Every structure is written in C-alpha cells, then in structure tokens.
Length: 293
Image (cartoon, rainbow, N blue to C red; front, side):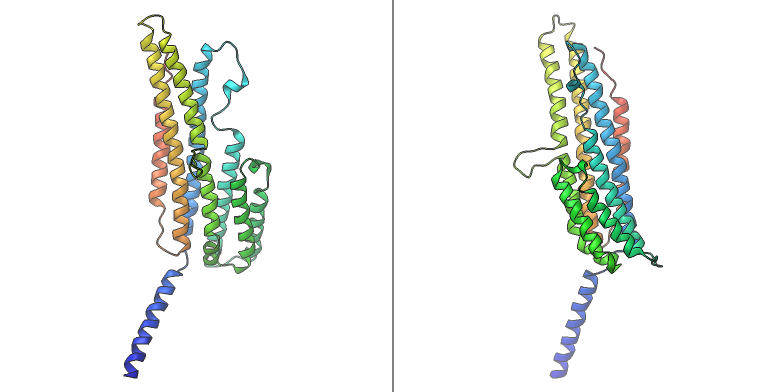
C-alpha cells in the first residue's frame, strides 16, 4: 500500500515538475528575433501613417486657404506635430535596441562584456525618458524610465529569460502608453491623436457643408458636394491608418508577453498584416486626388 502511494506521489511530482518546466520555458532566439522584426515593422508603419496623415491634413489646408481672408500660422498646423512624432520614434527605437540586446544574450556564444553593454543600454533608455521630448508625455516617460531602470538592474544576470519575464510588465506599459497616445478612452472621455485628427477633418467637412448651403446656384452645389465627399474620404483614410497602427502596438505587447512566458510566438502574421496596411494606405493616398474647386 505504501509502495503504491509512493509511486503515485512520485508520478504527481513529475507532473508538477513538467508543468513548471513548461511554464518557465525560455524564449527562443527565433521568438526574440521575430519580436524585434515586428518592432522594426511597426516603426515603418508609424512613419508611413504619420507622413500620410500630415500630407492629407496639409492638402486639405491648402484647399481651404482659397476661402481664407488672410494666412495665419494656426491655419497650417500639422495633424501630428514633430515633437510627438519624435517622442514616439524614440520609444520604438528604445524597444528595438532592447530586443537586439536580448538576441545577443541568446547567442550560442555569449559575447564578453554583454552584461555591461546591456546595463549601459538600460541606463540610456532611462536617460532618454528624462529628455524634453517626453515633458508633455509623463505617462510614456514614466514607463520608459521603469523599463530602462529594470533592464539596467537585471543586466548582470545575462539571462534573456529572466530579463523578459521581469520586464514584460514594463514593456507592456510602454506600448500601452503609446496606444493611448493614439486613442485613450480610459478616463471616460476619448482623447489622443485619433480624436484630434478626426475632429480636424470633421471641422473642415462642416465648413464645406456651410458653403453648400450658401451656394448661389444649383450648378455650384455638385462641385461643393464633391469636395465634401473628398474630405470625408480623407478623414476615413486617416482614421483607419491610425487605428491600424494602434492595433499593431497592442499586438506587439501581446507578442512580447507570449515570448516572455516561453510559449509559442510567431509574429509573421502581424508583420504581414503591417505590410498590407502600409501598402493599402500608400495606395489610398495615391487614389485620393484633390477635388477641383
């Protein structure tokens, strides 16, 4: 009887150990490399999206200028200001450097001094979070600072597994703050770049509607209506591009969590989707020709 109980207890221990080993599986070099590639792809998607949105806004502003009594700088503000874009890119560059450091730690032949290099990277990311670029973005600055500090403190372990597990919460917070920069409804009121750009387009569309009501003859109305439809198309294109980018950012966070847990993680579908969105938006920008006044 004791022998059977001992055998059953031994089997139970083996099951528990197997589960623990599986649950603590190390991230593979491919998983980390895939995540790095996804970060780079999101960086490209960001550049295309931000340039496209600003080009659309500038095009609409130039058309609108025909009805302005004079020119003011406030009439030509970009949809996305240079400072916000620079902060966004700096955050993504930090994540790309972080994932490159993890790849080094997973190298079959661990380079000498990699711990010191990783520590310097963490300190650099923490220092970046204190730059003036992030003054207006305290949430993102705080998240980056935490990631940099955590990375610097863990560098001595020279273990990608422990670093990813310990920094997963911080990486997710950085990406969550970036997603909130685009659209944030956590406070019960939607705010962010999406809302600002959408409101800008809606304002322009409303101005054209007013112009339609003031049209002197029925012959003028189709031209005004065509401009109105063009503005709505541009607004929808900008909305879709920004929400697509936000989705990619959140997927990036989920992919890191899967890799940190040692589970299967393949970002090829995410990267393919990003490539499709980039191509679609570029094509759409080409198709949205300015309506004739």
